[in-house]
Amino acid sequence: MGEPLLSRGVALFNEGRYFEAHEIWEDLWRETHGPLKTVCQGLIHAAVGLYHIQRDNKVGARSQLRKALDKLKAHPASAPNLDVPDLISQIAGIVDALDQTAESGMALLQASEVRIRAM
Image 1: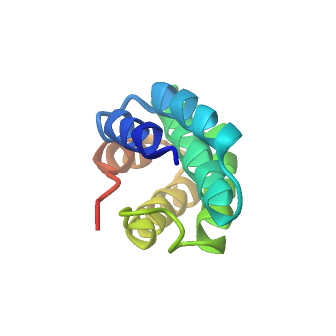
Image 2: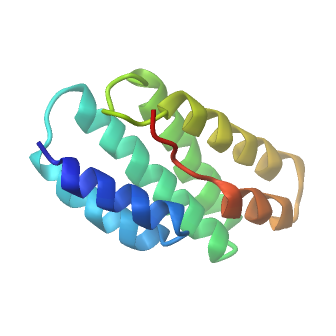
C-alpha cells in the first residue's frame, strides 16, 4: 500500500524538492494506517522543516524538525526499506546546528546534504 507514493516522495526529498515531497507524502498519509501513518507524519514534518531552512525561516524549521524527530522516533522500523534511524540522526544534527547558531547557514549546508537512504 502506498509504495509508489513513498518512493516518489523519497526521490523528491533527495533532490531537495521538499515542498513537493511533502505534498506526495500527504497523499500517502491520507491512505495509511497504524505506525506507518506516524512515520509518514514524520517525513512530512522533515520535508516542511527543510523547506523552511531553504526559505531562511529558522523558527519554523526548528519547530517542524523537532516534530519530525518525535514522530520518526516513535516507529523507526515501520517504513519499508527506509533507513529511518539514519534520517533521525541527520535531522538531529540539523536541529543542533539551528540551536547553536543565530545564523542558519550551517543548517542550510547540512539540509542540502540530507538524504533518505534505502535499507
